[in-house]
Length: 196
Image (cartoon, rainbow, N blue to C red):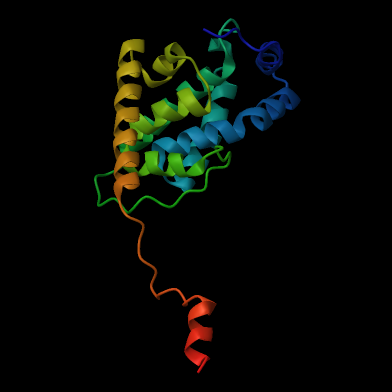
């Protein structure tokens, strides 16, 4: 497991002591990453915004429970995940609208593969991929955040990669779509027709 960032340890100490400037620095440092993670879980911008705010409020109230020997970001992700599960449980079953087309606040280097993953994988599988590959968290920390054993995380990652590989292979095997209008003839044809 990764060692905690010394800056995070100091921020946590200051937040425990009630320092609002330290809390502001903490929110500024991790807001985008927590929001992006919640977007992978909820797939709706409005829900992710609300849950991000609630995550940081909950963290502020619960800093006495934070273990400074552990990295701070996984602790925030765990709070965020639990809040999202709670929100989804409270919702009345209703016809779910199509997920919004989301624009991730922290665009990954290859956005197209993340869009494919979002479209083809379950929320849990997508979140697992996001945490491990985008946020570069070790498998053990991903497992803690998602409430899974490390072995289960490995299996989910393997299945997600296999699913994505299958879809990428299908996309490669499809011929490119034909243009709506035929391309213009080369200029040699035009000059040959006008020459007597």
